Amino acid sequence: MKFGMKFNFGQVVLAEVQYTDTFEVKTRPALILFEEQGNVVVAGITSNLKMKGISLTKQEGMPKDSVIKLNYIFTISEKMIKSFLFNISKEKKKMIKDELIKKFE
Image (cartoon, rainbow, N blue to C red):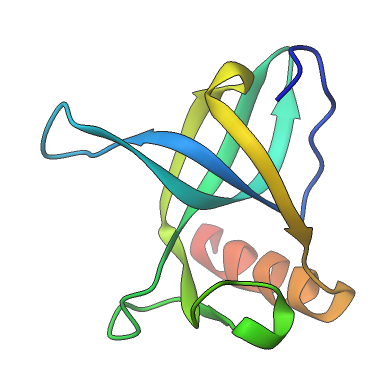
């Protein structure tokens, strides 16, 4: 992606992600939560449907049915974002906001 591009809540992107238990970095889908000064806060997305989270289907734009993992939130540099995939719906955005608010109560 172009350095300096603006990222917005609800965009699904492919990004280089470092795993928490290793130093391995892989390109994985992620959901943009917000961006500020080149730092992008994202939620990880997995195709492991046994994981807890909010579903994201092929019909919505994913290559495979997947889960947005709101328990896997991290900050990456905008330089780690490789490509834009699609925007999630307003309804899905509301679901995510509601779930995140519950985590802070």
